[in-house]
Length: 164
Image (cartoon, rainbow, N blue to C red; front, side, top):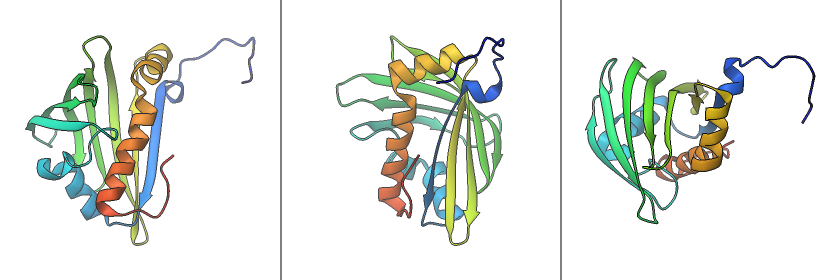
């Protein structure tokens, strides 16, 4: 890591976690896997987790409430309020979630970018501060959880590249 005496600016990139994967699947297939409650529960969350959806209304202003159930019995309730929904292109929402002991708030954006017959799916989480991002990485493992979540989606729809 390079350190400097220059004052640190808390720009957006410093507050983000990004995970992406290119799938051997169309944007339509990935869109359906993301927006269909019966499909998203098949892959949402890290390996070993299950998900229960209470409400999923994928439209601007719509709400998605769900609980991820960890293999150790810990529940991770979440509430998302959709800000932007552009079919087969972008989903953006404000998320409040986490465990009972560690809550997280961030803006999440998913983009669906066609690459020939494949699609690059990117999840970007933007936290209110660098400290909040670092805490979410350290205590909730959000980056690793994102990679595992995309791995599970790949098992459902197929893939041609690893997540990163």
